[in-house]
Length: 368
Image (cartoon, rainbow, N blue to C red; front, side, top):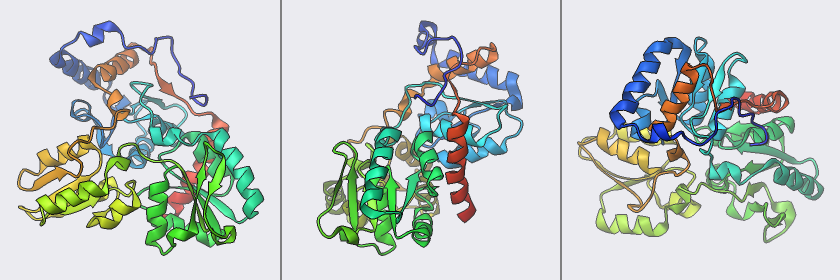
């Protein structure tokens, strides 16, 4: 938050009148503002958003895809990002200076991104360099703050997505002997394992204890995993898989690589959000699937495929709480502020931070 300037005089608390509007009134207002602003307005919506919001998205996708589409949209003066903080930051980093990026609710953060702040990371890097010398390259998942992307860019590293993580980890090992993977230990572990790194060659950096967790000879460490995780995907368990296998023996299990190693290892398929969507789209009518990812998306996939049997791998899973901060009243409030020339909740990344973050993003894009 210290890297963001919240521009405008409006309070962050949603005004009461928006809470009192009916769903029909709110939807009508969105359509009115969209029609009035035309190409000057662009609304990207992440896959995990509520249906009440995603219905108005001009584009849907994962965080990086939406940031890239925002950058490609040269006509839009106002980009209302329906996602979370780090996504809006990335959009601001990649778009032009005269384009404004808004987040309808500034409380829409990401618990994973918050598990690696810049102060922890700088302390960790100093200690790790003392341990391993100049043999480490940092990589960060795009699900990280602008400050972490900037740190990685400054130190020669790159960002990764769940789609290209294997390619980027291989690239990192072409540069240095070891890598530090931020902030999601599960994606880092699953990716490194898939390219042949043994689990006993992976250490964990604990930012709360400020120490390396590893049993064995330190010179054997190849991957240092930041001790962070996605609060949604970590809740899929081996027990969930056991229950599905017993109840639906013919059902395929497909999960996101942000899940724990043992869950990914026991699943039939694992891949990014887009991979999951495309796998279900390409599957035969009558096929059966248990999906291990965010509940809003799972419910949407179920609605889109009435000819298939689809369930959530964890039937008690809740939607991503921070993603759900963005709702219809906050979207309307944001659009009204733009329409009235008072745009609030503008996301603006410091230019020095943005410059180094672009380096990390561009190194990844060069490999794509």
